[in-house]
Image (cartoon, rainbow, N blue to C red):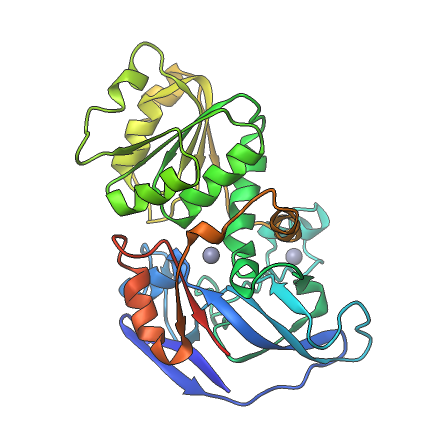
Length: 344
Ligand SMILES: [Zn+2]
Ligand SMILES: [Zn+2]
């Protein structure tokens, strides 16, 4: 079976490796689709994320995946061969202090697929065959394999939306119209937000936000003053989803927040300057959001029930043989929203 292995920045290879049999409590999955995430792209383009997370050994990328069960290990009775499953990359230990607190995304021994955060790195799921714990698999019947592979980024945005709190009737600003910004839009809308404005630097990215229901989109290069109306007085927005990881976006967003608004930081690009004075004077809450756990199964359910439709965001699907091209396309924001790789 083949897997997509990153050796160092811009050195991505398709390599052969052995197929493992599932042990007790595990399943073997014939992988169907894997979505390329911003973190996969950071690893590919820059060999890491910021200064702290660096690729130091070959790593199989990928953590947004779905597939069909191909074999069951002993004791697995809730899944059957042939089932389409969304596979959660979140693998906490269930036994550290944070797991015991129910903060599973903060597990001290997390083995999140395709992560260069720990060393040795945790190998990822861009492979033709994957052995996973049955508990990581959520049945995705009724969805396409591509939709099922969107459960992961959707779960990220559901977690952030939960962290942001009340959404009913709120005014939302989203900075960064990539997959996380767009999925945050869908989550905020599903949770009752009534006005959603999205900013980005790329028209093509903003067109997706428009298509899925943004009230207004702003290209900050072409309309640098368009946020001014919202920055007047004490500001306008109740919640900011900062999904770009870019300091100017955070600063412009904070300036448009009304007092006691909530700033959700999701974008990752390393450390940046923060307008602390405005946070103090407007009594803003600055909140991080990182990964998810139980939101993964919720994401699958929301898609199955038709409450959230991610299909318009899947822009490209390329075969495994064209993985390199898929990474190039995924990195071109004038082309791709979510680029996925088809494994079988
Ligand atoms: Zn992801
Ligand atoms: Zn743990």
